[in-house]
Length: 295
Ligand code: GFB
Image (spheres, rainbow, N blue to C red):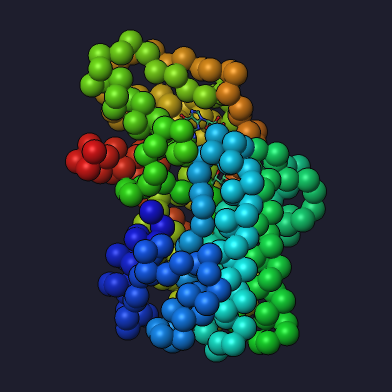
């Protein structure tokens, strides 16, 4: 979702003369040789690392080994390959789950490593933290220019709409869509509905990246969020309205809630002059329409 969206949006950017997308078919990031070869062949001014094994709470909590191994390998190979290309800048994308469970809300960049991680996604978070630390090592030792962007929970067209591995928004869109199609009387939401999340429409993240291309990078870690949080219960009622489902919503409390609250302090990027522009209802509407037209 993020990589294809960046290619689409940055193709129209005044700050970019050419953008080259490289997906998993083009470069095997589990191979250091192939990763190095792509960097050597393309010789880019800037790499945006949007590659990751990602998933929702169930996938993260079930495939814990794959989530840490695959993400570590991707990040190790990109950063090790970059050692010999110190003039190639890197924008490295992470996730808000790098911050500790007990971090203050809204969570600022300073909270990193201040406590224990939230258990359902600690393997994924640990791989993302390792990438930040590796980047810092390259910066101090070899002079690389690297910025780590930590977006809040993302959603939008081209997301993963598989019920078992998706994040909450695409998961609920599929559930409402199928319930309407099958005439079901209710849909099931995981957990208590009490947890709160902050969501960012994927175009807004690409817009933040485009915005930063014009800036001098001083911070090595920068949060990117919408600044608004909503409970999963409120989110499900909003989606019920958008999808026009007229049945009931049932909460399956045998499923995990995960982090009770995730809201980033995006004050740093806001003070540079960037703000998200897509409201949650507008983004959800666009994502639902995209799903209806593409599935
Ligand atoms: O989006 P989500 O899977 O990820 O879940 P996290 C958010 C909340 O929605 C949790 C609830 O409290 C879920 O229990 N939920 C309710 C559902 N119904 C559903 C459903 O049908 N599908 C899903 N997926 N959730 C992820 C991390 O955490 O966030 C990743 O696991 C990453 O590592 C990502 O950081 C951004 O926000 O809990």
